[in-house]
Length: 224
Image (cartoon, rainbow, N blue to C red; front, side, top):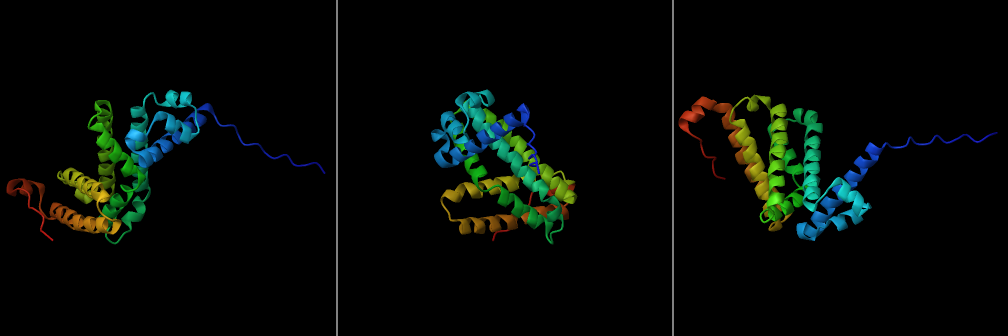
């Protein structure tokens, strides 16, 4: 009886191979940023960790700044995809607003945020990197805004909703930056405190029409 031939895998196209190499470079960049910081991350080190040649790395990303900015942008897209993938589950939650805030808190932690902070700090003295980061941040905010509009449309109809989303992002980033000083359980306590105030602000969007809020001015959140 003749042996049955094993079907061969279809060969990847040049586009698929290029995309896979780009993915390896981006993943390696994030790992290096987390492990060595921005100053210690070099294009040679990234190429070595990704298992590609320096020539291949330069073909995809001309400079170190191009590489690190693309890596963080890539992670931001992944973060947005996670949020939208869990949209239906969140809609079934008993408290949709609370679940949405906790998801935003969850997906902004880990290597992505560590790498981003490294680039924020480095961009203070690097005008080229700063400009790239400035171009990326609106994309991040827009994805979070779209997520909020899709999940809680009754709040999104209010013109103040955009500013509430920005405040949510500012609170999450501020708490996580202080993570170098606090243990995880302390950070969670800080988040729970901030979330109470954010929920209070969201409730005011429901209770106070936008035109009335403009006439009376903003109401400060209650203290703990």
